[in-house]
Structure formats: structure tokens, C-alpha cells
Length: 306
Length: 284
Image (cartoon, rainbow over all chains, first blue to last red; front, top):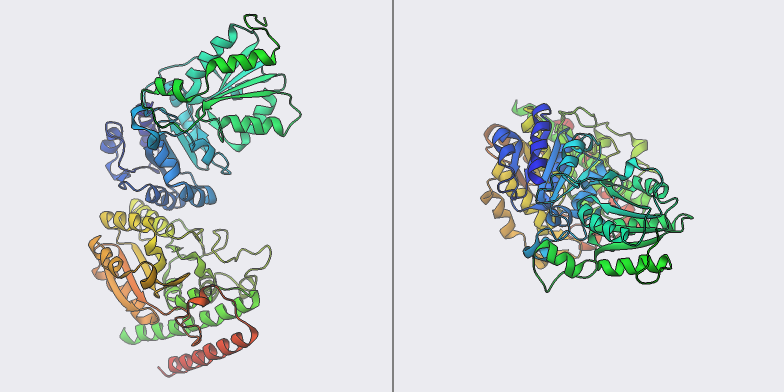
């Protein structure tokens, strides 16, 4: 995914000499293409994420479009106040590339797990979080995302996901009785849940959110108009991210929807492993999700609602 | 040429003192503190406002000014008034409801390029602005006013190292070395003596000046224009509360507003000095 992103960035940079790439000393094997092709527009600011964002702010104020590259936790959290007071406060087109949503970095541990980046950023007015689910999203959405006048946080899976089959939430009108909403990078987990829910109920939709901003709330509200159960799936703590956003929308409306969050439920420390292992260890247990769905549908164990 | 430069710097000394008067007037009117910090940088902001090309315009190639020590905003507003970027009436809205003139700068105000107020951030904006000038291949410069308390912030050093590495000659930082911060003397909190030497090690051109002499500050800039090889830091030795004898070097004037009696004493002293400076300027 990150390779694809940099390919798209190079394409854009060929046509737009305002584009500049800054890295906080990360991107080995990823950024060389840009660095070689645009050596005058590539800067390694060192392991200095505050400087990364502040320098980008100064560049963007002067009309450039700086991309800031780092691992998601460092890009979003280390310079959070700089993001708030810089690109957000000045509404500047700084693009922050955060690699490795959720527990994507597996054995690297909590210091590298972006499980609270969305929660920290989504309340910032004018900032858009872009979280493509596959390389098709990266290719088809990059240009429009880069046209945003304000800041964008790009939450990018480390490894390649060639192509998922899904529809965008924005394309959907009224949802099904059971609606699964996944943050883009959690689409595959959402698909697993959809298959499990399909064993006990029909009329399920699975939508993926690629663009998350405060503007999304009315879309979610429309989407949930006929929904009874909404399962929200994200590579993030169950607090603060997309689940919280959906719950806020429901609480601030007349919707009667049970929101079931699926995400990281506890501090992911004490066990290391592959992202798959860590998901099973720290993310919401899918059996418990199915139990909640059954309970809401008043189904007895072993029966279905079809 | 020498006579002309002398005349310019004497005029700037007068301008700086006028800024000092405005700082006291506005602080008194608003019953607001941060006086000592503002009085500390009057000469620095007088020199910057007189030299910043395109100040108050939206010209993309204009010099950028970052008041990294945002809590000295009142001095910058007063400087903007002196060079005609904002009106006296606008300056009088300081700390009024609905005003653009608060305790820290708002980029909606003409002559303010960046919002500051959180220490250690502005210098990074200045680095980006200077880098933008290099990429745009134009003559723009980036002026940053840094407080010595910002030397406590790690982010200051991230930016210092980067600017040195990039040899950003168009970056000009004015370090307001008044030796004070919010709760005491810098030497008692986090000493700055080692920090000053570090700039040179990072590849900066370091110039030490009397921060209350506009001619020394101006000369520091001029010399760097012709001889500089990297970013410039003018280490300006200053006195917090400069010009008001009972405020000078007193930590409490970082926060305290003035009583009526204190204001009367302060403004009288500063006005008397202003008259002296004007007389000297006229004689030259």
C-alpha cells in the first residue's frame, strides 16, 4: 500500500512542482523512487516529528504541498499539537502520511501501534482522515484527496492489499437492517464479520469508510435510517475512533440503533505476535459480537433471522 | 552611507521607544500582563518591521515574520502600527471582545503570518518559510523572534539542527536573551549558557548584540547579508521590562498588570526617554 501511495505521489509530483516530500528518517525501500526523481524536493528532517510538521506548515503557508512521511504513531501523536496549531489552525494543505494503522507493526509493539491516532485527530476541524482499503482506493482516490484545501492524515497499511470488493459509504443511500461499517484499513476484518453475521441473518450491508471527517456525520445518519444494528469495525481502540463517531451520531439523533464496536479493547501489551495473532488477542471477540446480534434480534442459540 | 545608516538606526531607536509607549498604553487599557516580555523586544521588532519586505501584504514572495514568543504579541502589534500596517484604532482594540488582537498573534490580522503561543513551534514555521524561499528561488527571508525560554523546548533544537543542515541563509532568528521565564531566572530553571554555544555547532552564524540597540541589531543583519554562510541567530542581550526601572529584571512583570500609579510612573519614564531620543535624532 505504501509503495502504491508513493507511486501515486510521484505521478502527482511530475505534474505539480508544489509537491514536496519530507520524511522523519523513515521509508527505507519506499521513498527512494521519489528521492531519486525529485532530489530537490525531498528532505529528511531527521528523527524529529515536531520539526517535520512545523517545517511543512511553513512550506504550505508559502504555497507548497508538503507530504510528511513517518510511522502512523509518530506522524500523528508525536507532533499532535503541531498538527493542531499548524496545518489545522491555518487550514493548510499539509499531507501527513502515517504508515501502519492499528497493530500493523506486529512484533514492534505498542510504541508502533496506531490505535489512538484517529481518536486524536478526528475532532480537528477541517482535517480529513483518508484510510484507503486497498491499492485500487489509493489509485482512484489519491488525486481527489490531494485536491483538498485543508490538511489530510493518510492512514496507510504497510503491506499490499491489491483489491477488495466493497462499496463506499458515500455511495450508499439507506442501509440494511444490519449494517457493518468498517474503517478502510479494517475492511478485511469487516468482511470476516459479515460472513459470520450472514450465518444468522440476511439483509446485511457492509460499507467501508475511506474518508473520515466531521462532515461524515450526516452521511452516517442517512445511512443508518433503517438500520437496527450497526457493527463498527476499526483497527483502533474501541474508544475515540469510528465507533465513537457512529455512537455520537446515533446519540444526537432519533435513530434507534444498537452500535456494536469492534476494535482494540485493551492496552495491547504483554503479548507480541503477527497482526493476525494480535487481532485475535486484543480485538473484540467475534463470537461476542454474534451473541450481541442474536440477543438484539431475540434469536435463540442455533436459530437464524432470515 | 555611514551617516545614512546612523540616521536610520537613530530613527529606529525612536520607533522602538514609541512601541514601548504603546505597549504600556495598551496594557494599561486592557489591564493585562505580559508587559515585561513585550518591553524586552521593542528594539528587535522595530528593526524587523522596518526591514521586512512586503509586510502586511499577501505577496507570496514577501518576507515572513514569526513571533515564536507569541506572548510578546503586543510589541509586534505596536510595531505594525508604527509602520502603518494596522491603524491606531485597530491597536486600541487590543483585548476587546471581537478583536483580532489578543495576547497571542492571530494570522487573520494583517502582518501576522503564523499563529503562535505554544513555545517552540514558531521557529519550525520559520524554517519551512525559509525553505520555501529557497525552493521558489526568490529573495524572501524568514525572520523569527525566539525567547530564551524556548530553548527549553526540544522542538527548538529539532529546527535548529535542520536549518543548520540545510544552510538556510535566508533564516534570521532573533534570540531575546533576557534571562527570565515565567517562574524565574533561566539560570535557576534550565540554564541557557550551553545552549547558546550549540547554535554555532549546528552551523549557524552567531552574532551577539546589545538587544536594546537598534543599530547593533541592524548591523547584525547587514553583516550576515554580505558575509553569512548559514542561518543567522542574533543573540540579543536584553532586559525584561526594559525602560521601566521598577519592572526591569523583575520576574513578576511577566504576568502582572499595572495599577494606575504604576502606569503613571512607567509611562512618564518611557515618555521622557522618548523625548531624549527624539532630540538626539533631530540633532544628528
